[in-house]
Length: 387
Image (cartoon, rainbow, N blue to C red; front, side, top):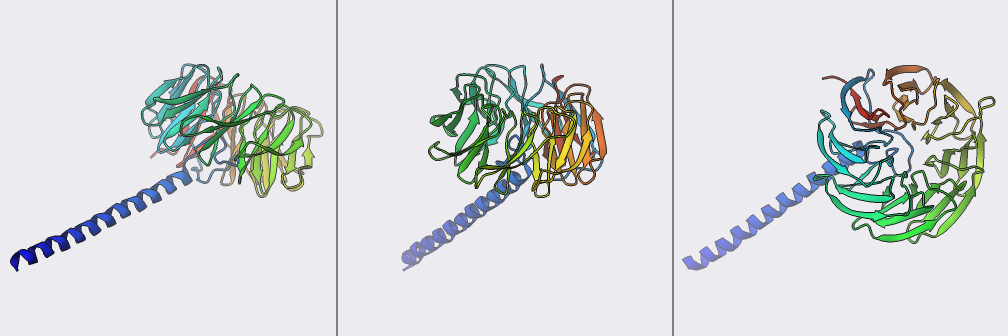
């Protein structure tokens, strides 16, 4: 009888221990998942901050920004930083991708590519993806800085990657839009356009939206790479399309800002400054009540997204190739003249400025109360509030 009771006791104890272990494991998974989702909401994983490329930050910045640290690369920075899990990833014209500690600006690791890096990196599932000037697309482990795989195109890659359904979408100067498996870099499909694909493709539902130097805005099915729609833009486009409410917004080298309706494949409005006729290189930042875009006319324009009517303009005194980022009630951008500027969204008045002294082509990245941006002198700046 004693032996029988002991056996039953062992079975019972084993059952309770197993159940307890299961609950601990389940709790860990839930906590880890919550942590991951919170990190995802705050991080700046790619150029323009989200798959629709709206250039709107979800976080906040202090009223008065102060320089927290400066990191120096060996050559200029045109790449916009990606920031994930406390690490800044940014490419340089010196051919290195740098991983930098967001808190103190210290180098974690650097990875040598095949050529200069103008493409902005994208972070997804512990891997950072980017292209280089030799046409090689790289997948690099975020922890170790070691290559996971590479994929070769036929020309320079300046386009940044967008990610959906474990697929990477980016353009190349060989005139193709590529879709690769994020896991191993294998080619899923590629779509041939009629010109360089300079900008980053946007993602809307199951469709990739890409503008290119062939003067078209194309909607392509992500599953099979089949073109669904093609909208003529009139001139070639270096900017990436910003998508909101089934509308795409982009500036052109024909000196215009266009709004295209994706449902009916038509141009809904076009804006051109009445006096200053210069190209638009930068991508737009878009909210429900405002489109903000900088131009080579040395101005920043705020437009009504429904009609294209100007709300205000700001004289920047030098070209604005840096794509603006909206943070709360302010919009931030850099100038070729070397100024990092913040404007009040409602009035267009300058509310903050920091003189870098070197051309700024990269765009701001905003995470955890900090703004990070690089300049053509090879310096990467982090702004925030001193503790």
